[in-house]
Image 1 (cartoon, helix red, strand yellow):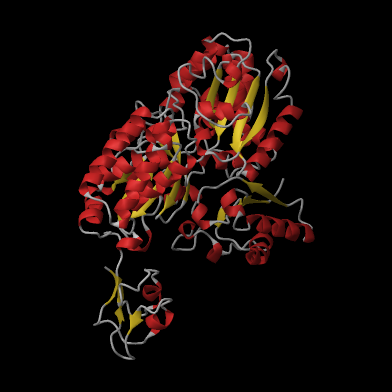
Image 2 (cartoon, rainbow, N blue to C red):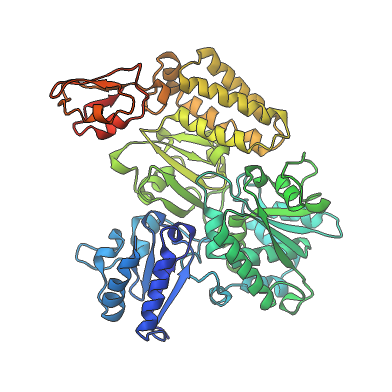
Amino acid sequence: MFRSHILVCGGTGCTSGNSMKVYDALVDRVQKAGLENEVHVTKTGCFGLCAYGPIMIVYPEGAFYSQVKVEDVDEIFNEHIVKGRIVTRLLYKETVGEDGSIKALNDTNFYKKQHRVALRNCGVINPEKIEEYIAYDGYEALGKVLTEMTPQDVIDVILKSGLRGRGGAGFPTGRKWQFAKNSVGNKKYVCCNADEGDPGAFMDRSILEGDPHAVIEAMAIAAYAIGSDQGYIYVRAEYPIAVQRLTIAIKQAREYGLLGKNIFGTKFNFDLDIRLGAGAFVCGEETALMTSIEGHRGEPRPRPPFPAIKGLFGKPTILNNVETYANIPQIILKGADWFASMGTEKSRGTKVFALGGKIHNTGLVEIPMGTTMREIIYDIGGGCPNGKKFKAAQTGGPSGGCIPAHLIDTPIDYDNLIKIGSMMGSGGLIVMDEDNCMVDIAKFFLEFTVDESCGKCTACRIGTKRLYEMLCKVTDGTATMEDLDKMEELCYYIKENSLCGLGQTAPNPVLSTMHYFRDEYEAHVRDKRCPAGVCKKLLRYQIVADKCKGCTLCARNCPVGAITGTVKEPHVIDPNKCIKCGVCMEKCRFGAVIKA
């Protein structure tokens, strides 16, 4: 029995901040002090509060150290581990009470409104040790399924739970499994979509890095339900830590007899393989993903037939994403009613969001469906930095839309988001403040879609390119009001005529910003002005004479000599020479340079 447990985040976010060097330094200090039998140091998955990484927690005190550097290790070890004195100054500030007492992590604003189901083991167990997963009820659900339930029993539980696919469209998981079970075929497949291509999304990656066995167990349960003996996890190669931990987990599951032949002493056989994706966004679409697994270029196929009838290698196939699978073992163990008790009538359970953009608490959150945008952004996320006003939030990535500030009290679920012109997507939530230009945001997402289009259908290949060119005219100040009407018309054409979900949803960021922020588009077109001061070709830098002290700092740093003036006299910017680099504003110490 250890007297102290030190958990160090080994997720991608903290690892990029040298958390593994912190881990190594702690292990070294423990060994040199001869405390291996008293102090246990382990690496875990993501704790969620990525803005404050690298993170480590020391139990039994529950001391939550944030932004830990290698040079902090000696102090934490000598003071806390050896002498029992918590280093308060290095703790996450919200965990320290006014009297110096330590608050539980679950009592902080970031965590207290969360309810972790898919993320239940992330930041809790060592993902590279199957024994720790088993200690937290791991593979118990698979054992129950194989020894106490029929395949139809399993599907009935998933149907009753109301679980919908967490990958974007929100199709009922149980219905998908039922279709595949009812399909006739001498071979069936179970696939996991771990491609996760949305900008700013890292939910699936974090689950694979922190709890890979949950996905493996769930896929085995799905295989039993539909009558499959082979599964594939399609994960992007840009996720090296996730791939490494998945590989370790699959090897361990085979060694324990939890993958392979006669699992749990039954006649059920199931094995898993990993397939690496090259980062093509279109391979997040189910038929393109299966085409890629087969060894072909990732392009979508017409539907019907749907994959449950004719999928991978022409055989009945189910495909769910990582987060969907992560819910399955807990639904089997705790029951459909338990899961259905969370969320809303048509959107049961919880949803994981990757919270990013202009927000204090960047990170990973899991909240019950029906939680409002306001609760996520202000109560959990801490609001926008520097006192800036919240302007909009983008959900669903390039396939979603922008939700304006006046809809901030909208409860988040599948139907509500679609109703206001956005969508759930896989769970990216990008927050924007008053300094963001909504036309520029739409252009950013559309540029991504243009690059990621596979080119198979004309509507997407050419339509998105033409739409992007129209947006460039708006941000350049060369568009007309008629162009705005043509843009809207083209958006609906692309939606109606594209082959797959990539093209069908590509215009959403444009349509939603045109709907809610029409005034910004018109300002770009009519006034040749970007209200947020973002679009470079519409910017003008000016020097306010009353504020200028004539220090010449701006003139001395201007790379093109566009600023003139004498010492102690107001300076002037020549707009014909100015390249709008912003150096003058950056260097001015008196706030005399403004964007006009």
